Length: 348
Image 1: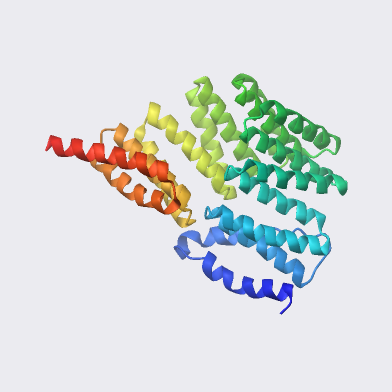
Image 2 (image 1 turned 90 degrees about the vertical axis):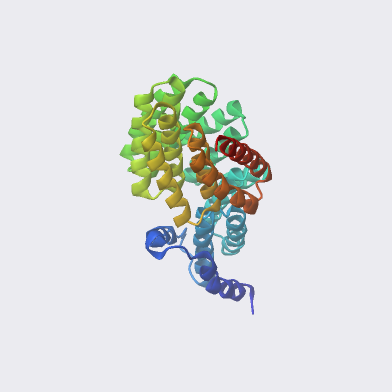
């Protein structure tokens, strides 16, 4: 059996492992993720199809929170794209690998992958690829706290996008420059950049990009204490994320709204949104996000003085933390649960 046949045989059984969950709740999401476009530069055949399938499977794994598995699958796709000489697909797959490493806080691995992506784009005179590559390198620098190093990457991306009249790239770069300003504490300047970015992202018909910028805008308004604008921005971001099935932005918008409603009310809206978050994480079989939701529920009810509900959610969150290997958080929650249980017993 040759190399490509081994990959094809492996693919034949993987969907049986990746699928599952409630068919009614998850069917639309699976359909959407399986429709990730192929990175076709004119190549075709068994190797091409196998590589594209690996990319899609990696997306499904990432949606479930299994980032290590997603990276492993995407690295196999990289080998195949390299073998058939598809630089564009190779670069975009390195994008996915780099950003996944970033989420895992493996920043050196993330930067290595993203710089490879950028080098491929430069070698191929792929200007759009350079725009995205520079933005992704800058994003990892932001995550590492290197704000002043991130800014030149975003500015260069902006200049290239303007030179080729790439509205989507301009909007992305402006939005990321807003993140730099926000990171430096210049939230009013960040708002201006986000507003400019929104105009471009609307013109580019980029709903997922719009959702990202609206959520960033919500973060900035929250930092400025402008809570009506905060709720409006997160609300639009959530609506766009739902429509475009952008799960990352859906979580971001919900988290921003929950924090705002926890502080200023009505708290019933926080409960409704946390229920949506819990349903989403379970539908996608994303244990990490389910854990975060259960933990937030427990903390929320503890703040509200609803001891019985807080105990119930801590009891559900702790085993999940253990399964995920979150030992520090497991210990902290166990301590809170013990304290709540003792106090509840003393009041009886």
